[in-house]
Amino acid sequence: MSLVSTDRSVRALLKQGLDQLRAASVASFTLAAELLLLHVTGSDRTWLYSHPEEILPEPTAEAYFALIAQRSSGVPTQHLTGKQEFWGQEFQVTPEVLIPRPETEHLIEVTLDRLAVREIRAGRQPRLNGENVTLIDIGTGSGCIAITLAKELPRATVYATDISQAALEVARSNAARLGVAGRIQFLESDLFNRVSFAPGVPALFDVVISNPPYVSLREADSLPVEVRAHEPHSALFGGEEGYELYGTLIPQAASHLRPGGLLVLELGYNSLAAVEPLLDRTDWVNVSVTKDLAGIPRVIAAERVAHREHR
Ligand SMILES: C[S@@+](CC[C@H](N)C(=O)[O-])C[C@H]1O[C@@H](n2cnc3c(N)ncnc32)[C@H](O)[C@@H]1O
Image (cartoon, rainbow, N blue to C red):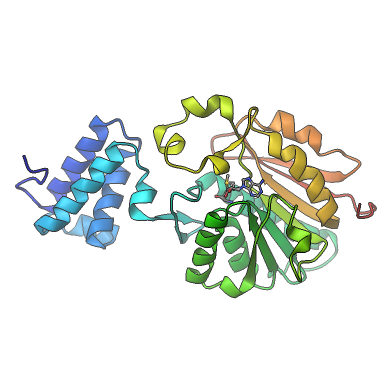
């Protein structure tokens, strides 16, 4: 039996697609069906809803139902369309990188807010163009954080690292597509281990930002199949407990931040209790915790104490 309905109108295809996704218990099935139909037609949502009677060619309908079948089997929509929006920009995603999550946008908000507050405290107008700001994104993945900050802070100097060469290629490609390739230096490094060896990289930064892998290996089986079977495990799992990487990253960040420099970290839903004590008040001041829209403590930020010498 052909998968393609006899009625190939936009409305009928959308309805059949979302019915199939709902039957397969796919979350956000209406949005997924819409995105897949938009992808195969190369159109936008306005077109979709203003042309409900338009009959699509059979090959287009076939391509759409092939994607619906893949989505029903657990492949993330973003791997089928190859993209995900983050902070209003479209990022290319592949199975080599974590799909950017909406809650990671809080890292951007907190970073921009804290930089503005720092300027005000110093008695300056908050210009927020990134002048004299050197920042580094540890574990850049798709590059969503580094690229967004490079665009928001056009005068900042931006570095981005990842342990995965494949992820760095995706990040570089995103930087090129979004017009900031010349503004970001990408480095392959396990946390900060190789950062200081790269030519031209400063010893100290003004901002260290990271969304590290923080899921506990014990929770692997409870993750949705889209995540467990399709996203890179090196981007998901921080170790048996989940929060292990923070224990190395935070002291390394203390050594690589200028006095008064800013550390901004994303947290897992249950990481706060383990991570906050790592921000020892002899090294860190002005610690703040920001909740996401679901009320989960999602971002922890702190400033390196001003009087402390580089270790
Ligand atoms: C949770 S993902 C975050 C990706 C991206 N920054 C984002 O917010 O969508 C974590 C990233 O850290 C990288 N990573 C894992 N362990 C690392 C390590 N020891 N050093 C550097 N990067 C690491 C992974 O390859 C992955 O790209």
